[in-house]
Length: 271
Length: 107
Image (cartoon, rainbow over all chains, first blue to last red; front, side):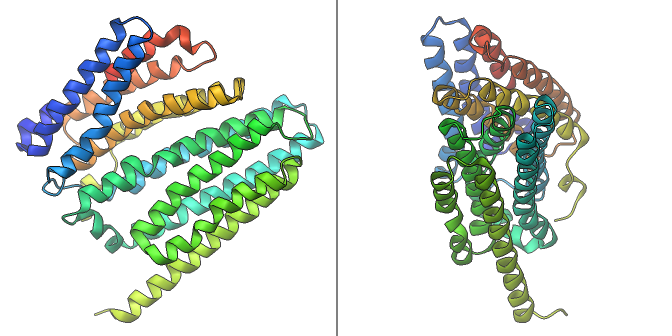
């Protein structure tokens, strides 16, 4: 792909990626032909090489000269997050269907649905506002835009992707287990999943909206850990607490963004 | 800033759809054996999958997605992503080679 882009645009970044990703792909291809454990080593070297390339490109000032279209990010990353949440929702339905309508499973399923809705709102409320407020994206199209996009989306949204996978897995196990207490590993997967999702959401709030107000929302990370620690043996209360915490964090974020928008309108009145 | 390129193309969305299968199978893998070992395996598998997807997303955001070459390559990538998703089940270690081939193809 980068060969086509490099020929078309003669961009130094594209040529850098042609060489770098080409080398990483070659190393990954070698892993196919190697026996264990050498295949893992080659695969890892190829992966680390490709992950490090945007960092090296940033150090060589290649990212600042390459134009980027930041408006695609909320659509693509929003969609991938939606896919993850959709999978979690599918798991709720599937687990309830497998559980033969037991009261415990139905309750847990309903609470999981509420939690997924809270996560959905928490993730898409700021993204929707960011799309409306195009000036939020000016940071991504400026000279430091490439580096910011790299940090915020390439690396910063990975926890969110992992988080929705973990949430979906915990849904499946917790609802279909018919166990009134929680398996410690499941509670760990659930807590980690929600924490990972929140880290990615906070990264967006702190970077694109306001660092000071954004950091004030970081209480949710230890709160999730504390909730899992305290309500480890009562999945219903745990899910209820996590849902309330997530909605609370969403409300706090909405108030923060509302204040910022109101202040910016007061500073720069409409022409 | 608002241009036709700001919109996501249908081929990009088609590629994203292959991720549905990947996310579903990855969560199934962990749900099948929910222990710390499989949690680490899920993490180890999620990193290359994420990185491959991010690579395409940044490419289209930087160098337009409306060229025929990009569309054709995205369709090929969708095929490899689907193939990669099929390796993610409880016997995934048996399909390691297919996983490596699919990942190398994606890269």
